[in-house]
Length: 169
Image (tube, rainbow, N blue to C red; front, side, top):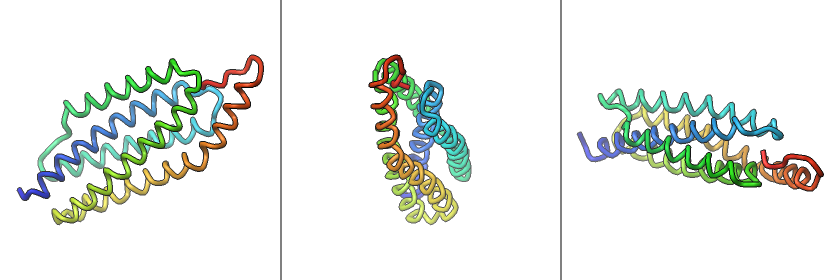
C-alpha cells in the first residue's frame, strides 16, 4: 500500500470518528432545543446527513478491506457527551451551540478537503467523489449556520429580556 493510501485509510477512520462525534453532539443539541424550531429542524436534517456520511466513509474503508477505528469512534462519542454536558450548564446554550456547531462544521470542511486531496493522490476516484459530496453538505450546513446565527442571537436576547421566558434552549 502506498503512503497516500495508508494516510487515506487513517484519515478516513479519523473522519468516521468525527462524524460519530458530530452525530452524538447534534442529537444532544436537538434533544434540548425547545424555543428555536428552525434551528432544531435544520439540526435534525443534518443528523440524517451525518449518519449517511458515516455509512459512506465505512464503504470507502471497506474498499481497502478496512473498518472504522473503535477506539477513535468511542473517543469521539465521549467527547460529544462532554460537550453536551457542558452546554446544559450554560445560560446561553443556544448561542454557544451555534458557535460550537459552526466551528465543528469548519473542522469537518478542512478534513474533507484533506481527504479529497489525499484520495486524488492515491488515485481513488470513488473516495474523492464521496468526500466531495460530503464536503458540499458540510459547507451547506456551515453556510446555514452563518446565515441563521444572527437571528438566533436576536431571538435569544429578546427572550432573555422577557419576564418568565426561557431563552437558554
